[in-house]
Length: 480
Image 1 (cartoon, rainbow, N blue to C red):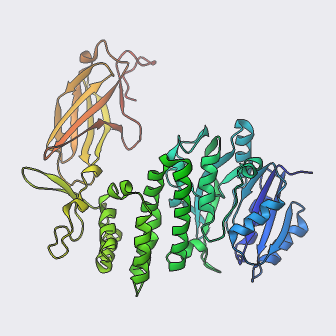
Image 2 (image 1 turned 90 degrees about the vertical axis):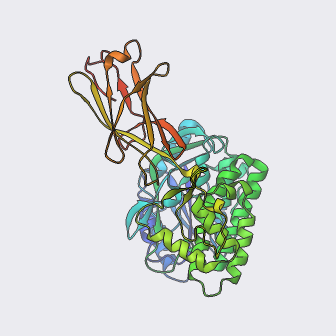
Image 3 (image 1 turned 45 degrees about the vertical axis):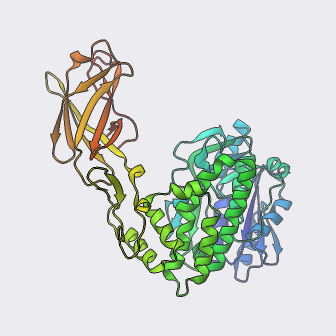
């Protein structure tokens, strides 16, 4: 009988982990599946462990090839696949029991070409946040697309997904050789899909190895590894330039945020920096000028030092970044024409002559405004909150608060309470004829720089709202 799902698993020298991986596949709540194990020339006991599963579970199949790498191994498995749907797992990772049932179920419901979900990193056997996938699956959505949901540019792995096999074959998707074979394919699949389903549940546990052979992703600072990463980045950029140029800036920004860190790490550890600086020039040249110009100020400083070959100074800045207990501060400079700069090493160092605009952090200033309490005193509502500028260790100079229902704006008297605390009184009579709910607006000014926004509800992401007395369902005066 034809299985519903084919799972392709490349196997290479993973003896300490493969049994746990295969047990997780055998335990899937979606049991109508086949698991195609591709022995990529393992030299340890991985093959024996795979053979044990093949002998006792007819859903497991083992094929072999000489060592060609994970991409060709996956391609070999795909050629053997019979399922309506297709998935991939690495043989040192773990798939949660309900993952494939959830993903296949969404595809059957929506007709999308691929479904993807959240990832956790297995560190010392315990699940932790996957920094690679952070912020991607906070707002799940069905029948979307990467050009509409551009946060999917961050979803660059193939194993937290299920694909329709006819979609895969129709578009001629194939893994290239090399050690970053999944990144180009993951991006191609997202762009070529008619629609994509995003689920918020964790569907994959990605292991950081602590014994046995070091994984590819744990050797990311080695020079050959870095050149292969650059090749994968260039392949993705070439594809996006042809098929979805609107995604290039987002992809470049991700490379500048995540990938380039491994180049920095290599420069921190190396004895001979020449080959790495050559690679760095090629790496930076491959990225768009817009993204380089708008990078965060601390990253711009690192890039500036990198471009000038100032390796020791770069190491000092990397050390500064790592050892700060809090986020680096942004400070004002200048009396008449004030600008705001990152308070980083070498600022206005006459010896290095780094331009001030490298440190310019004005675009990174953000308003922090939240309501912490709202109480009825018997005559008025008293709102207590906090207003400050993120990364600025200064009291707000001028402050204004107002309530708005979208049509009317009611200014409030503000009293300071400590360095960043504020207290405002609300007379319900002033809100007559408005409502039913009001937001609390903020205008903050310091050294001529103005930020405006809405107060948040404590530490939540939602805006704080005030219910007008008489409008609440219970008849009580409440804040929402």
